[in-house]
Image 1 (cartoon, rainbow, N blue to C red):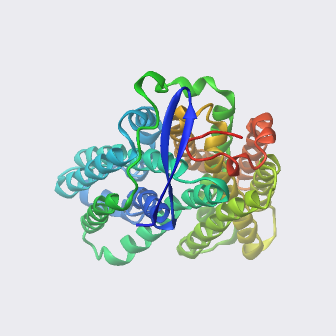
Image 2 (image 1 turned 90 degrees about the horizontal axis):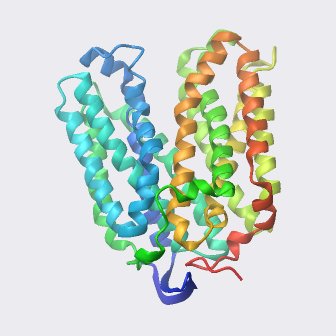
Image 3 (image 1 turned 90 degrees about the vertical axis):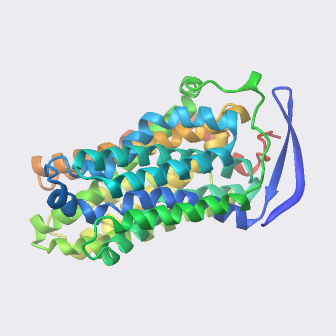
Length: 417
């Protein structure tokens, strides 16, 4: 299973914990659960037209069919972190898979748009649990340079899951709306089987030392890091959602261009996230990396909409923006053990990171389309530059400066030298 028999004993808040040090097999298994969460989003992207046709969904409401699971995550993430700290990551992963399967089956059996949306809300509970439990477990089973790589790799799981599920849904659905939901449910059953490959960890904290559900919001470093991610994701994901429409308006490109651009967007974002982990291991300052990433988002996103630069250069600038966003998200997850005030807060800090990243996914597309309609070039340019500047201001500079490669020096369980 890749789980080393070596255990480390850590002392924190007067509680001795044992922590498994694991190989890459459990790390990649945890990553798979993030990809399962992403698949819950990606499978629905090609189905918006079908949900309008089959269930009479109002066109103005149909896009919520995709994004309602992220709204659930924004609302439920603190509760998920609280549950993980008390019941453990493995149990929450099992429960989340079961809930997600139930949500898929509700959609399969639905006879109306309202019933479809009920199923999607139920899926949102599972989506939240998979992300929050996966983040917390990835922090707890890694240390040193491996933690930086593992956490930035974790940041790629959702976009890769989105891309794979979107491609599978668009090519294999063949007019049968329910088919992607059956497929996702089957993948979640595989996830249930893979829980056995994960190490059995002791509870992160004793009941006396358990972190309160909303206590993490009192720590500015964690909140500011998460809020910076909200600004970055809202700008980049909003531009990604709107970019094909921009190319149609500005350069008379067919809307089908969205396919290859979307694939390239995911690919370079993954490279940016993994690159962030490698740079941290090369002793690059976390603060320097964060400021560089948001600068790429602002410069690339802004120049995407520069006048008369052509489709190729506009697309290249958009991909530059995506690299920066991928690096920022990777850094955000790598910094979870740094911005957490104690090992007892790992679950809560991871939940906050997921919550605020998903908030960016929720608000980005409406903001981007509103900007596009207000001013074809100037509106989106202002969104990109403004989002990057806001993220740069929000980055917890003192925390990241003092946390220079700190995540590489925090042992499993959270003790700091």
